Length: 286
Image (cartoon, rainbow, N blue to C red; front, side):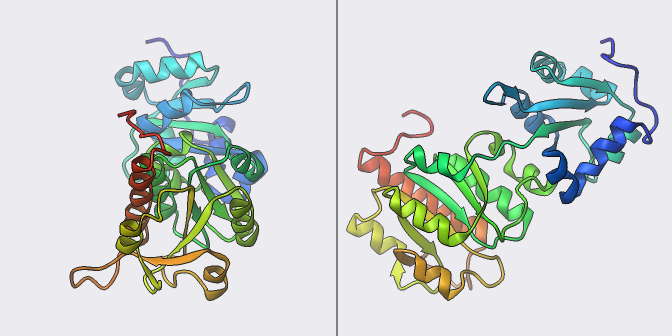
């Protein structure tokens, strides 16, 4: 397959240097661009648009990856992205993974204003408050997508959703549902409640039990789950903002659940209750 531009040999190429800088948050914020690595993320980026603008603006690919994933490279070109064939050294220089898969895309920021999230009247939302680990943030986003949530909101004290590790952990889900970022937690809770959404804090010390709430039939309405910091959970002032603090029951001897696992349990509990109530569409359409 002939290259779209001459093969990029030197990591000191201006295009490579510009992409490499996007590993740092301050450069991402300045350029409003981020990196998406691997075939799954690049494929999703190539198919995503924000209004009239394509999300994927540039793609670096080794010759081997360009041949193996010719369909993805074709989708990238069709989306208007500049495609560069690059040496393995260049890809390794841009990538933030130990074993790069040969494809690295440069994408436009795609976060949605919080006001647009509210205007869409969401029925299931994940709100990340003070979540600092990018892998956890990306995994919760993936769980929210799988459960059929309509949005994910990250507070102003949470990790950058465009951190390369967060993007990888989302496994393409970052491109599937609206994500609002930098929202103060009080503003987020007040806005969701005003939009008719019940706001629940997920906390292992909660005074309500998730199983009991499901049995009582209280989970079928629009719901936002607030998930806190990995180490210390939700502070009292954040719990006080919500409508209820709910714990996931531990039936065995485990001390607790990690953030992403607890998020998956809570989001799927709400999704199932909403479908049973006839108010939430299934992700699979069944």
